[in-house]
Length: 249
Length: 280
Image (tube, rainbow over all chains, first blue to last red; front, side, top):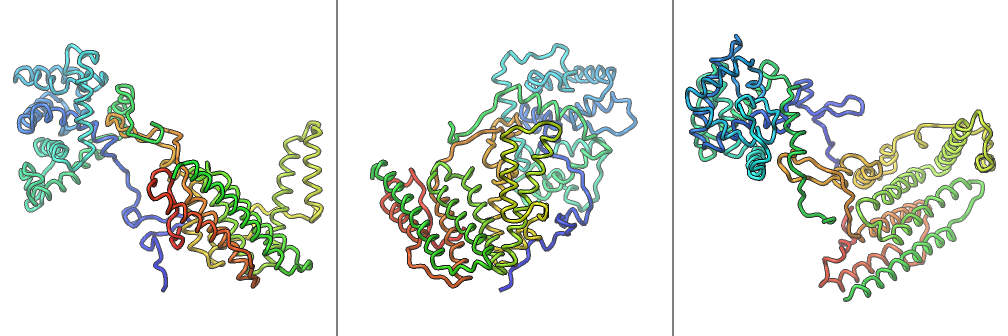
């Protein structure tokens, strides 16, 4: 019997076999959920973790609306990423602080983001704190909370992480940046609340997961941003390595 | 069964396996009608057979090597020798000569590198002796000034092509190539064997280097015996030789089976080989 040839669907260039996806679409630039998107959306996860989904989304929505109000940029900003919020000017940041104080939201946001700023003092959201949080106080609790929230975000399809992505997409709708045609799964956006219990919610979730990359395209985001790099590299010093059992243990 | 008894049995098994392997080599050499007009064939093929015995013996004598870190280094070398031999056996005289000439060229190249290294200064006595001895070794076979240096593969084709032409492409795909990862310390080997994942989510689940211990796995010895047997079989088939001595491979398999049976209540301490029929 003749053996089946391997890699038949690949395009061969000399000694290199290019997979069909890349061959047909050409070179792609990759953006990593873990390396880039997770640190950028972490603030949403922390707020939703602290205040619960409904209150969290409401707080985040008011926060980003205020940011847009204070921003002098003519460009429509989504303000879903930590970096984009950190790009506000000093005056805009002061304006935002004032708006949040006036609504009584600042303290609620500060409470939720406390571990992030305490452990990662160069986080661009540190402008929300007049007195910088110290990592020495309640460090263990901060670490545990951060590990819990960050650890959960690796699973992109878990309900909590799905809700983080849904909130980011919601902010794109809310800012007027994102509009969808009637009939598309994303047009049934509110169904995401039922995720993962209905078939439609799973379809909406899939649309959200594929749309989230839009927030990280060149128009909205530069891949050379410092925050994700700082977050991961600083994290090495924030806590030690842990290992499961091995032959050397 | 207490551990000392098991170790004694393994020691005995190793000793007898080596004895049988050497007997097999000697028996084949005895039965092979030597034609000195084509001595290259006998020297090249004979040396490759002996090389396989040496490699398998080294594996057997060093149970510390029976792990995924080191055993593939030996097994890959055995796979390489097997493919070379199989390809040579398709045209023994021409290819044996090619094999020798390429080897002489490589030795000449080494000498030239050595000479270049000491150019501009007086060579030490040891350096001079080394160069003289190497040149004498080459000259005893072919004058160095007649010896060509071929920096390509000795056969003029890739190992894969050799395996295809020698009807052992499966061996290339399933033995030679996988073991190459360890031999060349490629990513898909070292990432599995020399990295350990940190489970701290704040560290991006990165991996850190480690030098892990591995328990000895006699399956590696079994594989080396199997490749030795394949080499002997290829030789026998080509030259129509049938030896009367028992097979070292069969002996090892029976011994490992026997150990496996007596060890059924102590499975964790030592892994035993799978069925003889099981493919690599």
